[in-house]
Length: 207
Image 1 (tube, rainbow, N blue to C red):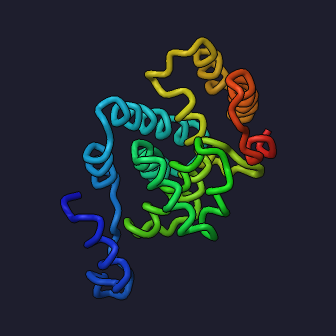
Image 2 (tube, helix red, strand yellow; image 1 turned 90 degrees about the vertical axis):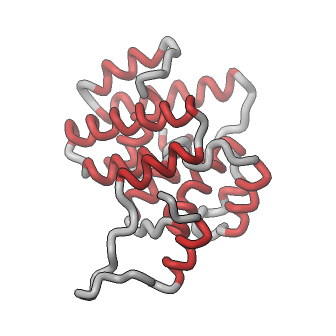
């Protein structure tokens, strides 16, 4: 976690420090991601990240998703949340193919797309499940994988979430992931409409 992002990009680009047996060294661990989150986020956002990790691992265990992947995705899901909007916009524009033109979507999803870019390009994460779980943790999408559902719901229901509907969602989560996800998507769209905010079509397709 002490290696500057610029150095990590060079290491990744030139495939340095490879495993001598032929496989590539594991470049990202949960401990690394935890330290990275602490270094890049405010105390409040960092605590949220830890709460999401805790619930994500719990949900992964309950429903049969990969617990290690859930932990990594949870720790990285908001890694770009507090970066300036202009920086986020530039990141998603520069990586339009990878982020599927996220720059054209509502600002609320930019940080998720940017976090996926950081995970892949700067940290060397190549696992598609982890990358998609990070990318769609805010909007959801049609055909979500189990890991994507886990991260989406962990973000919605993390321990510090105090909105009235959170307890209902937590109760549903103990019984049925898809019923909980359906209700969460309905609430999310309802809140956006009430606040007159733009809705990402990915959320509509997810519903």
